[in-house]
Image 1 (cartoon, helix red, strand yellow):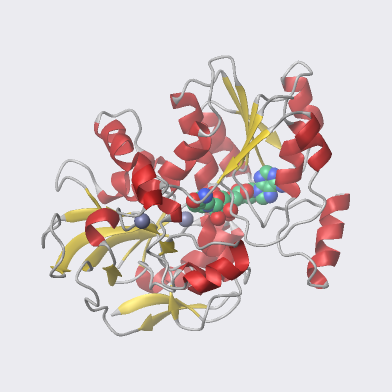
Image 2 (cartoon, protein in one colour; image 1 turned 30 degrees about the horizontal axis):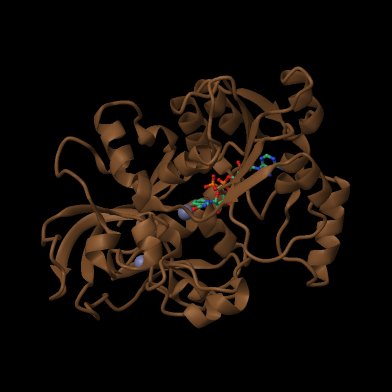
Length: 390
Ligand code: NAD
Ligand code: ZN
Ligand code: ZN
């Protein structure tokens, strides 16, 4: 089959690889009908994850049709239409039973690697390096889905298009969880760093959950325009001081809730912390560029919440712990517990409360994947979100 494979920093190819097979009784094979490229894939493309190996099949936002099931699969049948969350979940461990699906205790085949880096293992993830299980991803014609009954989410066969339900597997619940983590009250001003696909779902979700005002920060004109279309007030971080402008827009109080929807590859121009990050990264003393996280902690109103859907992988320095502690901030973060939200969000799509396809700007074939990755990374041609059809 054809699949998008990682071959090194900046080197993604559409290769021919062996078709996946049922390996365990709880597996299913899904024929992928639509998949997408996520901002998290860019961290792999840009070489931020040392646990990638040449030839790894990428992709963790995908959906399709079940074409084969293992002996132990009970709920899913050949022909079912499914969206597959990026988190592989056993459905039985204590964390799954609590709804903490992204930290499932049984799905990471390389638990020992994850324990070394993070103290304890987290869930297996599709197409997301050997620290999270080394599972082949879904930017491919076919994909093996372990623990299929409890990992895949069945969606109705008709009524909704792939493009309307695809993002239930990642960026819609991710934006939603980030907003839920903010415990939004109706007087709240929510500041969102980033206007990428995840941030756009944070903005939309914050409004759906009742935020009074959302302020969105980025520098890419078409992304800022999309945020304004959703009702946000915007700040261009290259034109204005973010902290000063947030202070002005909130009558000197600061935003009640802050969302870092940027993560470890934040741009920071020539700011002092950016120069330090660059130097430290060159000396291998630091891995993550935490500019946005630092800025959110400084900008946040005392007693507020900083919610972090943006991905961080390793170590960062100069985190303003004093501001965090003395202002009494709450920090909430995590890979998304996709399954916790998927059915509720599917219902909201069915009811017409939201049509997640609004973020899509580009539709391409799997063969065009390498070009699509570059376009998404470089924000060429107004690219905000690409979907690929294998
Ligand atoms: P993206 O790369 O398209 O978007 C990032 C945006 O941040 C860009 O528009 C960029 O211009 C902007 N940005 C860069 N520096 C900034 C700064 N200093 N201030 C404000 N904006 C800045 O990616 P995406 O798909 O929107 O994903 C965003 C983040 O969410 C990534 O880190 C991704 O890995 C993460 N993510 C996390 C989960 C999860 O489960 N927690 C799921 C999906 C994605
Ligand atoms: Zn993702
Ligand atoms: Zn589990």
